[in-house]
Length: 105
Image (cartoon, rainbow, N blue to C red):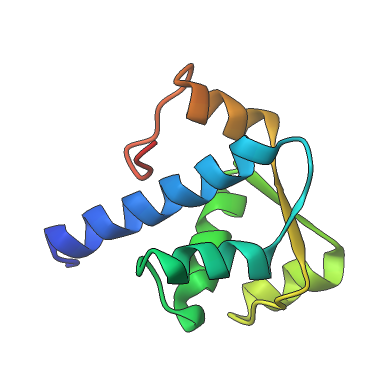
């Protein structure tokens, strides 16, 4: 079972990704930009970004642009030049009209 500290960190990183996308919506954002932002804030290391992207896209909060990029993420490989954008469900989550215990927004 994951430690409470790890769970809280995962929720926080997911929320940060959504907040970044919300701040520029409806414009898609290059994954490289998100990685750089998270690295600057010491929230994540490059190899584990795939788990956050996979979680958020699985919940339909974000959309990965391009079928090839989405398939690579499913294999744990995040192409840095791939783009993601916030979905209407992601907007609802950030704005508080829906809730998810797995994301701190």
